[in-house]
Image 1 (cartoon, one colour):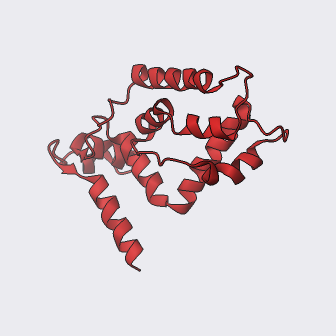
Image 2: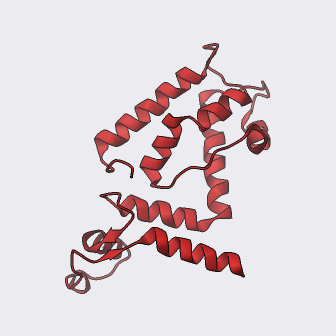
Image 3: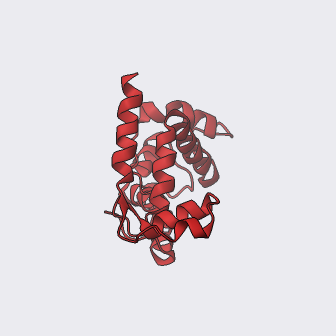
Length: 165
């Protein structure tokens, strides 16, 4: 289970991800070729940051998985990515994953609301979600604190049903 989502943990995770760039920039050139980009994306630092921010386990990538996106992100055609080009690649990967699996977005959004990171939306977290969706406060009062919805199981069930069609 990832640590709770709070400013200190987010800042720490982002700091680790920033330091990971330095670690994987083997020749200290400020740019990364495809093998180093692949290692960086699969690094514990980046994976932990993604997990903390989205509460969704990121998938491992191979050089083959990244080849086409790498070429698109390499705007100066140097065969290496700068930090800003890497950010473009990273956002493209996230965008592709969301396009191919909207359930990932749903899990990430619910994971963001899952403050205690237990995989369940409890009564308090459910009230926050429903308030964000515009439900009036009077309708939210009867929701007990102890109620819990295992959103990961619900998403998995939906995914399984969608895969069977």
